[in-house]
Length: 279
Length: 254
Image 1 (spheres, rainbow over the protein chains, first blue to last red):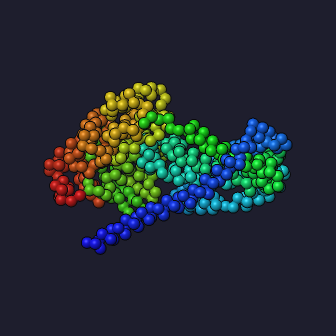
Image 2 (image 1 turned 180 degrees about the horizontal axis):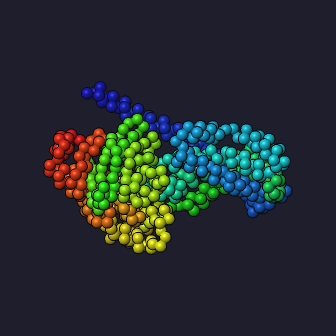
Image 3 (image 1 turned 60 degrees about the vertical axis):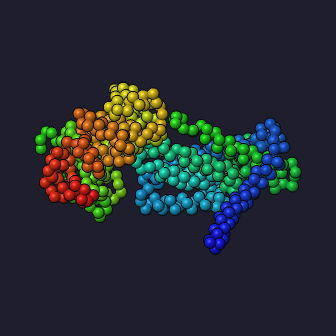
């Protein structure tokens, strides 16, 4: 009897021990993340002002960087989202063959690809070969290489979650496959598509290496698709290297702006795309 | 072939990869009648009706051979578009599958909107009529904007029937439409099936023999991919000719 009791106590102890082990790991995982956020807010918030957000680089502002990041996100999404989503649709709806599985592997490798390599490739091919100047266009193309596989794979995964019975219901009504995909399957997997796109946007908004080699950075507001441009990650990188407290403070400010920007894009898109259907 | 035959299968064989699911099935489906297809699990009931609206070919590795006639015309003819066939031969599935992102109204209207068959028809009117015929109108008329998946399982299944009726098909195929429903919802669907035959030709797959005897005019018994016996429901249930049918009906296997 006492033996049974002691083994019960031991099991109970193991149970609690395991629970605390998990809890401690969660806390350890959160500490660096939380400390980054706290550090960025503490050091970045004092710098924020109307002038900081709107003035150009010659007047202690990051206006060009904010504008540049928005332009980059816009241009990259313009290229990356349609291609990414349509590739994902292909992989999910037509991807029952060996070409699709090759594409899937390539796309997975590309998702993990070192971004500096994508940057130097875009630099060699587009900056030197095509636009002959550092340009937002080259930056957007480089970033879309990173965005497409992310969007494609999340699109594929979320469309695969749409039950096959929904597709069959539509096809059995005599609705063509392309219309079924476009108007039944994609709306059903919509939240996943939006998550994928936002994941892509968040990823490219903070990327530094590819744009360092393609848009270079600038103190001026947007001057054209074939002129160098500024962006927030670039501003953070460049400013933080100067031995000037003022410029380093600006880098912290730019970091805070970047985080807030990604966060607000996320919130706005989620609110705008909420399902309006009742209950 | 008499004029009364809406559909006919001639030496119909179906395969999934190497596995043969249907073996030389020859079946005549009478117009404006309910034909039940019964048999144990895996005997090819579902495969058979999925051959009747060309849904079978959507399964990877699925093949078929033989003919299926609709009004005397082979639906597997090279010139015939499978999409057109599916508009004439509607289908209701085992599990209710309303479109999850659409309202009740849009679910019923979806077929008309997305096939371009809307022309010249008043959508509100079609939706109301279809829901009335599916005996769902009174329960949902104030909630047409609610999600199609927000109603009960039995209601969802009637919604799926309304969705199929809205396109005014000639034949309605039902693949065990009550297997996911409770007895009350089942009774309502069965009543509806009997009413539907006034306007449509109905083919219903069921593993429930009592259901087949309650709703159908003709019954086909299938076993291991072959059509064992076919005839008027009364005859099949009261005096089956094939000993296998008798064994199945008396519950000896299946």
